[in-house]
Image 1 (cartoon, one colour):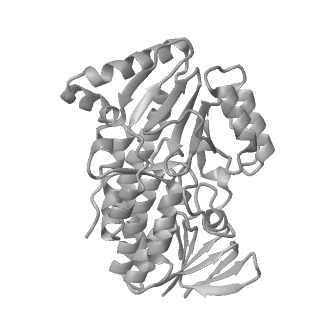
Image 2 (cartoon, rainbow, N blue to C red; image 1 turned 45 degrees about the horizontal axis):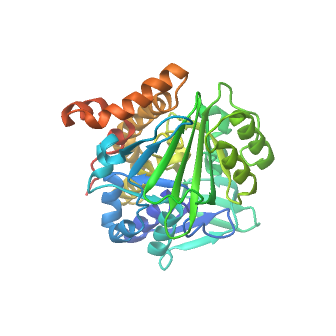
Length: 398
């Protein structure tokens, strides 16, 4: 059975790996001209269920080697003494054996290496049209190529082309959570090693962390905005103006970060939005990862969810060979509660993580200083409803 998978980032290669092992013939198409390999992108967390998937793929030793090694959070503000806290004190799951933080580019590279000898990859192309009948789907690509597949899977992220073609316009399914995320590279001019710097403003925050082995750092700017901007998610100049306007007048390292942002060749900005559909499947087309149920970039752990969901989808398809409708129903039933838990936790993370007022900022910073001093049972109770707890709450099928 030939299966087209759109998207070569995380969910797509994981799905392709397991489909190939179960006798399917997956083809992965990716619109970018080449794989985003190396240490690009931002840092992503893999919690216990995703690590279980990686373990079954033999990738855990390589993931451990690629760990970002940033274990300390340093809260800084102009005129205030810095506060240092171990990250695994704030989020116990980060100190567990079944967790790793890696750069997204490292993860993408490892997943491609695990699949490139067995899976056909098509780079620099994307799906233009889908025409389904009772026995398959005729696909026309932007390049003009036409091919036929038994199934089509959208693993192409928040702005999924497959979702648009099969289900309808993006605006019908996305829910804006009230914030934006910007990420870009810059020199590690603070000489950071193993430390992440955090600055809290009102309705905005800035994070700076090192990328080991490169001499670079990543900046993350996360800010609230009541209304979603009309700027297109690929309009770089409009995005840069938006970030400058939001952070105008901020102190700390922010002026330097804004200057570095302008020249960054990997600048990325998008809204923090969720995807909600009544079903992730329609006929012979289904969705996996952010394309179907993004919990919210930066606040919802979409990378862990993508890896787990891709594994489950492959399991469901292999368990009902030739019966795609039954397989898709099984996939949605198995992953549904997990998706809902992750989506419910994400808005809380945005609400609690970015102070809305000077008073809330003061309380947040005091809590950060106090939390490591609390008894373990009490701090665990306070953190039990967080995103990491939701992401860890799934057991893979065998």
